[in-house]
Length: 324
Image (tube, rainbow, N blue to C red; front, side):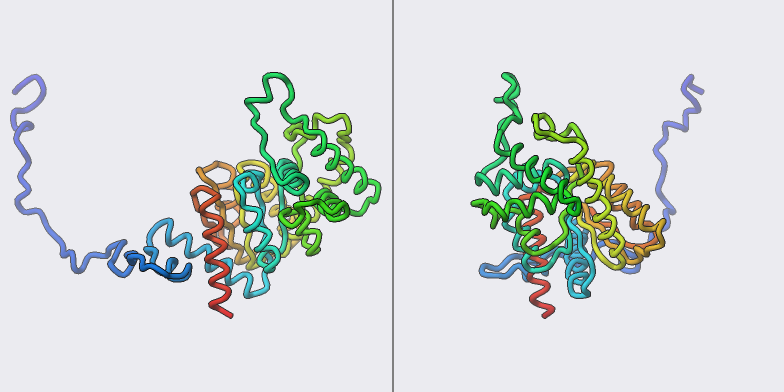
């Protein structure tokens, strides 16, 4: 015996007598029926969708499209909750088109969302270079952005009957903002579609402005949370899509889900979709997993917004046309 154990421990194990099974009888996760189809020039988005393999993310993408088409066809509530990044990567025209088509019932934004949308509406541009301006203290000091939004908030607070999203959207229409046709807030106001804004104080550049009124911002944003909860209360067999919000909207959505269930509303058949360019903890558990547990379906789609969301909406529009 060696100091490392019996000498036969070094002998290779014989595989004689190993029992085998038949490939033909064995259940398999993938078959040729699931494979993709090569692309042919001149095809449509519908043909592209049909060409995708029924495997992993492609299968989830098809499932998301089918869920959205089914919800729209069934007259169910579809809510789009999003951060500011989709605006900054140029997706407003796709979202505005979806609003005009009646695909979404409501829109929820974080505080940064109204800033970038207002800058687009007022100036046709947004997203400053933070690194270039932070060093000498000029980051976030754009005068027109803050003055317009705080003016709209003050007006809405005085009226006492509107939320933050509605106040800003209606003000954009009232002044005839030059790029209002590309604004999510202005489009929602024109269509009388609920748009809510959920602010975390201290996170947005307008909170540094001398005109900042914390009481007014808080009052209007809290009203929006109540409006958002009303929308969530109608999500039975509906759909909630979280687009690029890693923290604020997933947290707001989870609390609204708890509120409406506490008040006796059913969320049976709910579908949730989370779209982001990387996996985030809160959006995964607060959107995809927890709200749908035992009651619905959660779908996670990972990829760059500027590619994934236009593709999703193109497929949904094609699906709706095909169903008509």
